[in-house]
Length: 162
Image (cartoon, rainbow, N blue to C red; front, side, top):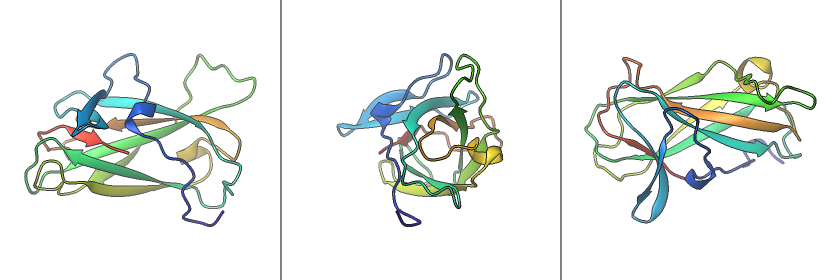
C-alpha cells in the first residue's frame, strides 16, 4: 500500500454514541450525517475499527473531515478534535486510554448551507497522537466538536458526512 492510500472509511452510520453529549444521527437529503451542535457543549462520536494489515506505520495517518453546515455564514470557524484509544490484548477494556485530543480548525466554513467542505489533519505515528496503533490493532477513534473553544464561533450544526 502506498503512502496516501485510503486505509479505512467511516460513515455516519458507523458511529457509536458516547454515554453523554453524543453527536446525533440525522439525514441531509437522504444522506446519513452526524449533527454536531453549536453552543457550549462538546458533542462527539466513537468509531471502532481494526487497523488494516497494509498500514506500514511509517508516518501515521491523515484523517479527512468531510462536512456540511446546516446553516452558515462567511467567516465562521469550527474546531473539531479527535483522539485515539488502542485496545490491547490483556488490557482493561473497561478503562479508556485515549490520547490527548488533537484539534483541527475548519476556517471559514462554506457560506451556503449544504455545500461540502473537506479539511484534513495528520496524526503522527506513536503513543502521543495515535496511541501506538499499528497494523492489526483494534482501536477506537473519538471525534468531537469543541464548541467550548473560543475559536469555534459558527452558530449552525456541523454535519459530518461520509
